Length: 256
Image (cartoon, rainbow, N blue to C red; front, side, top):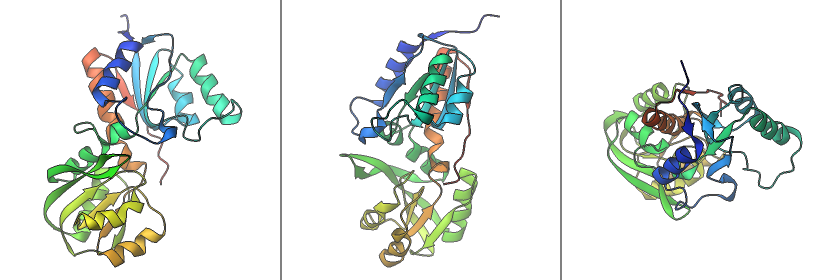
């Protein structure tokens, strides 16, 4: 049976339009959109959080693969084609691998975003965009049926599938929650100004723990990687279902 084949350019156009890639401000190293093209034909889609060497090597084993990631290849800016960077680019090109990356456009998407999907999984209601980064609201804030702090921590751990570290600086009973996935712990001051009982993020600097105590906010460090698996899975699933391609998630957790 012949494998279904789709046009890379059409898939990229669909994702760019869906995510508003050209409209969203981001950090310079994000380089959102298509980062490596292939021969133009796509036979399967793989989703992953990071375009690290292991992910690139595994994804390159089947020619015609489209790899969708949250953290792309160029976070360190302009790099020489040496060492690991050379090996990644060579593996992708030798394996006819296309790489598409979406950072803040995927974080803040109202349906496919890391933040809104994690918020919904936690049972938040009245979810609204919150916390401006790079000129746009990136996180979300919502209400939750009153829940004890420790019970909420257990719920969060169950949703992300890993342990959660809690800085218990806020009220024992949680009613309002701010969600900003990834490395947003440094926004704890602004989370307090928004009136959040709890701030869920991935990780943060050392000082944010004591700051949460002083500001009266429960700060949940749920893991940078663990909180950012939602968006790439949702995007890959949606695109694959639209065009009839198989897709899978390549899990390469960092533990951070």
